[in-house]
Image 1: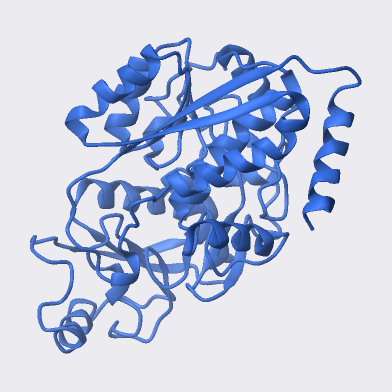
Image 2: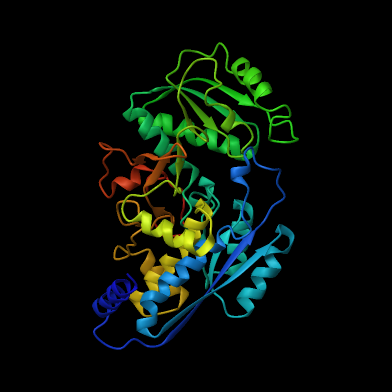
Length: 395
């Protein structure tokens, strides 16, 4: 198997260049900001210490599979920090000559750190989903492999409409991220022709996210909370804060499917996904880490593989050269999701399919059949050119 892999990498290398490549050192900084948080609803959702970094390690190995034949050396510095020390840690990376940065942080810190890195750096967001980062708050030096909330909502909405579940009961949380996600679902409803028949807010009162008395309390509370809702086909959960969403399936007053933050969930990747070569990716990750892949791992893997692919094609390690190539029509990357991914040159967002999972299998993949677009059907997910207010990319 290793012989076949090495032979394939050599063939790629020969196809890219017909002459010897110049030896290059490519150093990437992966900065993860860790925030204080309550325990998640389920112990299965506890965050591993190497979250994100494990995906980066695998991506660096993948880059070296081809890069090693080309005289290239890929290395990554992994830095976990707190919000109050993030600027200092980024400063240390850039002072040491690192201008290729992958961020796993919230939207506020992504913007501050991208501004700090400056226009000479290439920064890739592998965590923050706020649509504003791809809209009026975009930055010319900032690309996104993490999907926006708009992409997440559109992916779920397309499946709901394909199923002819066009009457929605929207339940959202009370935190700012929940409210923003709810707005993304409202926009998706308008975009694809669904009707939100009723909305309700589940207030986050603080304390543990786990029910204090377990399933007994949940079994009593959620049916009452959802009682007497207007007639609907599906419950849409907008719970970016992970407070209540997982309690909705099987507990709603009316027996209805749940989409969004629980039930059928739109994700970038999931351990159950096995199509399009994903099984070998999963096995390599599990052999490396001894655990299943998380979305953060996949997104950091994507970010570092994007840089690697651009380096292979341009034979350069300069941030500006890599950025221009990544945003060009020539760039594409295999991502184990049925089609190659690339970037929108008007806001730096990666185009990619979204997996819909029930946490056991891949139920479907959006964009759904029948949703067409003049450029790419992937542009039916998230902000299209006419919808984005981003001006930093000159469009």
